View 1 (cartoon, rainbow, N blue to C red):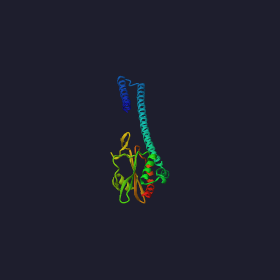
View 2: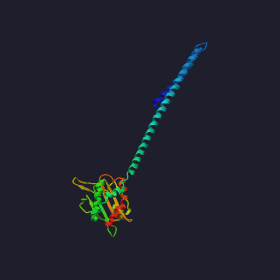
View 3: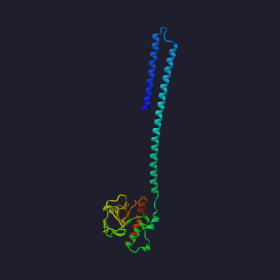
Length: 259
């Protein structure tokens, strides 16, 4: 931009200087000639002034076109960047929509996750069978199945999967902490940020904390009678959350038959 402005100023200064020198030249001839300035001199000066003016106009026009071209390129680039950003936003939204469409069929998973009736011997075998089936289908690394006591609002562990804690999991009350609040709300809770030291996975390779936790209530006739706690190293997605919300009453109905 500075070079274009300099070219304009130089062209204007050149034209002005040419005009001044032309008048000076005419005055010199006029003062030193008794017959006055010859007609040819006027024609020559007019031609010089005309050429100088034409040159200045051409410079002005060229720089103006250059500025317009630069502005066009800038606007085109900005437009391209905006379109690219809009495209990324659209692709991201489409990705979320596609993820939401990938629903897991609850009728299919009901058969996969619930133990067959002939294998149900007692409450412990049922709850541990459910956790074992979930581990096979969803790659969980640890699971607990809490069942509500017949009298009161206390939940106790009746089934475990890959749990190797030094102490038995404690009971919880309805509405207390994460587990109790989930049981009260009767909605699946999916967490991708596990509270520090909330749960630790023990294996032959040592101990580590999971990346994702899901709490799924089992509801029967409007009352939460069980809670499934699942831990995994990969994040549970929205389709899995929706699946357990849809199976909540199915788990509750089967569980109520054993209570």
